Length: 467
Image 1 (cartoon, rainbow, N blue to C red):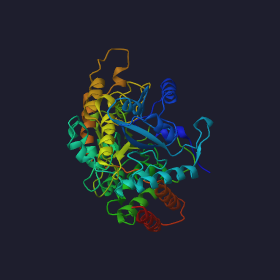
Image 2 (image 1 turned 90 degrees about the horizontal axis):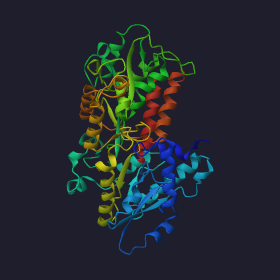
Image 3 (image 1 turned 135 degrees about the horizontal axis):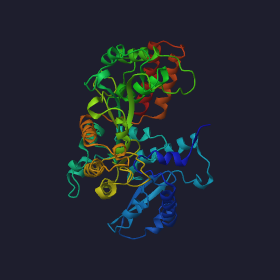
Image 4 (image 1 turned 45 degrees about the horizontal axis):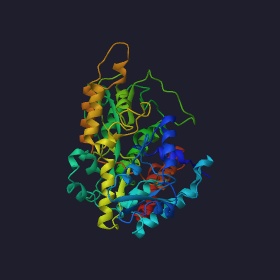
């Protein structure tokens, strides 16, 4: 039986993770000293204020809104703003001190209970993506379980839409409604040297294939030439382009998808182990997620910004690159009262504020230079970028290697502005279907058309049931 450790689950929240033991220990002490991880009844007694409006928020063992030593739920509750957040623990029977993982079946049960409460209405007010299977959050968004945040932003005197990355917000909209707030984001993309891929962005599959055929023998994609690695590089991150959740349909039986399967199957068979990269061979493409300024700067260790093209994933609909918001989503229940919805919005506004977003896990200013995501707050993004590319380059401190340049920063901003689609976190069941069928192709058990048709039928059935 698969195991899911509590630590691994919490680390998937790209915005709110911390890496060094010191910060974790201090955060743990905060959690122990405050009353916000107790049972529902105990926590409600602690908030017996008489006037405060109670906002209920689900968690799985503990909440994820920790910035190093800062507990943002506690800060919100201590602000004397007329609202108090009560945590409803859907994994309260799981002992986090045991060191044992939560079983896969238990995780599904916890998710199922939370989904039922959200769909019932009147139980949950603030809804972060705390699911073990994060795809559940997105399915609920499609079903209309969340309030449209656009009116809250438009009517807010403290924060305006242009203070956030509007391009990311627009990509997250469902039928022109912003059903959740992405608190952070990364970018999934593919890039290559202009001498191999040209300077056109958002290419089609046929354009990519034509250029690949002109590459010298031994050329690699993501450093490898085997079917599985090429699949992970070119298709796995692009699966969402074949699913239209708004229309509740998928297109895996399209000619484009079949052609992509045939292309993947033309590569070498996997030897069953991770092969070393031969850096002497020409590399055609490399896929990667951009989740931090320093990490992004490493793209240019042997190539300048002017020599690189972000071609994106090959697609006939010009999807190109994708925003990936991981699990850093938070929503307001559509069934909560207007007063509770306003209180929930005030918590979300706090989370996207400059004070919360600048330097907290994004720029490496904390957490031992670890980076997890880019901030949705535009000013926080701009200031952290300037802090790095304006760094005075002194001899002997490896500054040229450690800090991005202004040209690299400008390329990143340009890529963000050009990206128009969000990569929805699909449910685990859909990924398992696709992996199962594609590896049947690689093992010569099915043809590409059979695989495409089987994926189409199986995924469409799931979409019909859940959307």
